[in-house]
Length: 321
Ligand SMILES: Cc1cc2nc3c(=O)[nH]c(=O)nc-3n(C[C@H](O)[C@H](O)[C@H](O)COP(=O)(O)O)c2cc1C
Image (cartoon, rainbow, N blue to C red):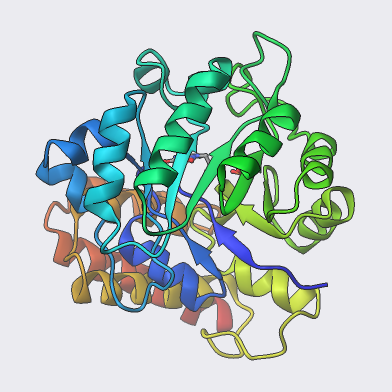
């Protein structure tokens, strides 16, 4: 049975043009990268840049994190007019986040976590969702006990990444525990961790019975993964937006050109984002070293975007010829 596919929130990856591109490639749900409630509630311009959206992004779901309940509540109040839903991050393992007892560290403070969720739901006119891990990995995993408490609080949807804080991204995602969460609650649960193609998407669905699947690293440089999963699992028979070609250079070339066009229409070309996506979009292609040479040489974003575009299109002509 078809379920919605979500592009995972990813710092430095899930910028607005990339989220819109993922939508064009078949993602049903997109979420901003995590944004600090300390920054948003203090009106820091850089934080507000991360929660920019566009009418094409519906629903618009900003993700926020923080260990201070009042800042989280203040942020929810500031965001709710522009958001369709607000996602709370309890999954980030980065030390700069967890040392302030935010992100995944809050899984070790379940009372505090539930109190933050309760306060955000009380303050919000829009639904609140939460993204969590299994637990911290230092104490016994607690996601299966926590999930029904969050359901009772009124959380709209849960997304569970099948790893602990301690694991960061190591080891295999534990889909069996996600299944237990699915069985414990009636609200939708999205499964996350190690879904990279149609085979792993189906396998994860078979194990978890989740209401949706979230894809992170498998979509970096590969936004076409959403279409490919839907096509290969017979969820969707519409043609891909890149046309009939199956040639990797040509597909990446279409994705890159769309990314650049959408960026020009929305945020403008941001050098840091272009650089990151150019590395990802060209990874694994023959001669990708040459593309990286363009990135280190060319500092002007407009020129750099055009040079990568040219390199991809020449590669696709060469491969097709
Ligand atoms: C570069 C990168 C940045 C990430 N940033 C965030 C973030 O901002 N918020 C969040 O909830 N998770 C973040 N994550 C975690 C992903 O959303 C996801 O839970 C994790 O990568 C596991 O899914 P995957 O196996 O499909 O990659 C990030 C992951 C990566 C690789």
